[in-house]
Amino acid sequence: MSSVVVNALSFDIEDWFHLVGIASLADARAWDAMPSLVVERTDQILGILDDRRVRATFFILGWVADRHPDLVRRIGDRGHEIASHGYWHQPVYAQSPEAFREDVTRSLEAIGAAWDGPVAGYRAPTFSITPEAEWAFDVLADLGFRYDASRFPGRRAHGGAVCPDDPHRVRGPGGGELAELPMSVERLPGASVCYSGGGYLRLLPLPLIRMGFRRAHRRGRPVVVYLHPRDLAPDCPRAPMPPIRRFKSYVGLASTERKLRALLDEHRFDTCLAVLESAGVLASPEEVAA
Ligand SMILES: [Zn+2]
Image (cartoon, rainbow, N blue to C red; front, side, top):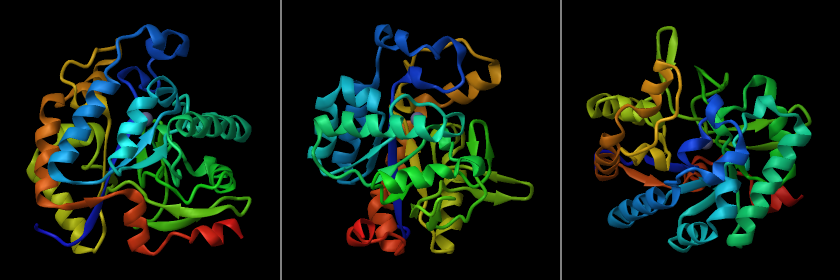
């Protein structure tokens, strides 16, 4: 172990066709007829975590939970944390507060039909709780969530926030409060760069990812890792999209498992909830109920 900082390991459980902003995938009525990789690749993730005896947080899309309740149970039965990734995978800032509440509630119902444990955490599709969408914190607090993991401290397509890099408390304009686990970024002059999740983790060579971990740990800061089942699927179907988006969506798929296993060997990981607990930013369940 090169470090005593415990990092947060997370997976957003959705299928390859849940990419945001791709016209040919936007019609949800077509999803059921598409080939699916979410079960096979999530089981692959569970196998890797079994090997390394590591717990993680699974932000599960309600749409997936409805279709694969056995998968939700397999995740929960292994002691991993089950959390919500919403239902339809729409950016939060593109929804009204009412539609967002409906979407998240439906995801909780779908997860709840398969798994009767508590759901404490939420992550928005594409880190889309932007400064204009912070009303979402009011909705999440009202629905009983203890934390959010949707803030990306920098610019990105379909998301991005202005916020501290460390775990912190957030408060919506209506006063709703909860803990926040922001995505990890490295601050470079003029830009915040992600290195520990999704396309960034697939694209960057391991030495650069390791440097990001070292720099975060020097500040005593946990690193948040996030991946999707499709990130481990070299056979992931390719949807028609502009070349730059195509590169970002599919670069490095064959290297993801090797990088993930290396990071699991080199660092300590736990669930998002456990990391926030250690950071001291979670309210107790009693305080939430009060
Ligand atoms: Zn997602």
